[in-house]
Image 1 (tube, rainbow, N blue to C red):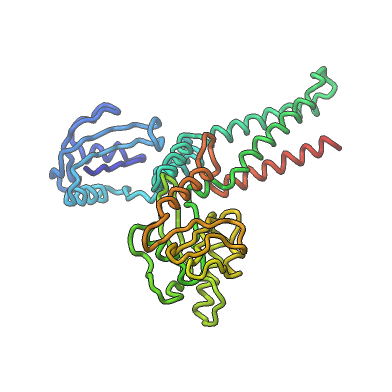
Image 2: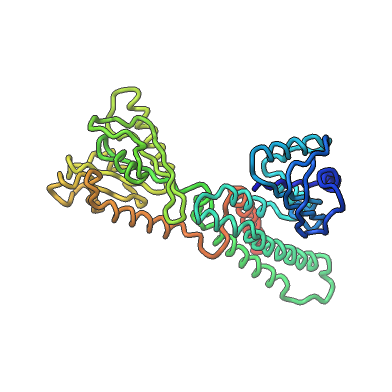
Length: 388
């Protein structure tokens, strides 16, 4: 089935020229013949809906045409609509833009619609639905109403200071401001969860050459996306895959082996590895069981609180611990599949615990964060004035 949705001032005119006969009742589906306005010939028999504004998504009159889904029918319908003067194809997101302009949705809700359309995982879908349903709007509107009310109290105190006003207005206002400051600070202390869920959690596979990074990437991808070879330095550029870890979007990057290189291309690859490590949310450090317990200093420097340490080539590991690193790595074998399921389970739990969308609406765009931060700073300045 194909659905054609026409919105705007010409909707009624289009209905008349495509569907001969009396217009059906508003919001009641009817089966009608659709005609070519140029030749008058029938195009298809489909379901027609007449949706008069302003009680529509865009706030305008809308005609919906549900036709058979064959290519010939689609092309005939598009040609028929294009024949009518003043009709054009909608730009991407134009229906949401018209809904915003006509006051049917606010900007956060329109952004939620865009996020829902592009959502690829369950967490992205749920977050987009929450925002599309007005989760952020309701929170910000509550703060806006509260600020207007507090501003009115302050203005009343200044303009009518000689009147018999309650003595505790000033104290009540600043008490409410401090409460609002606390609420906004908590909102901002979200560790960018909403933005990371929207764009995907960044995970970097890091390690020395030939440690098994590309092998692990292929295992996670469940297909050969990176070249695996015994030759050191096979990976020269960053190779990325996207995963869905129980609803949470993840982007995993295979990087060039980090070591003291002399060649220009190898140096560039290592430079990109360091860039990837700095921008990653989680670092997976793969250590080489063949050289264990020795760990190159370049690799040690990469280990931080957001790192998972894996010791690959378990069949070659003779000593379980090392004195050069504090964290005990998990022993695995990419070749034999040893420890892989335990590692993926741990990684999934780590991602879920860190980036669970929770119950409260999250900031999903830098625009939201900047506006909330500016508001917070202004409120803090007002508290300093109160202390003068």
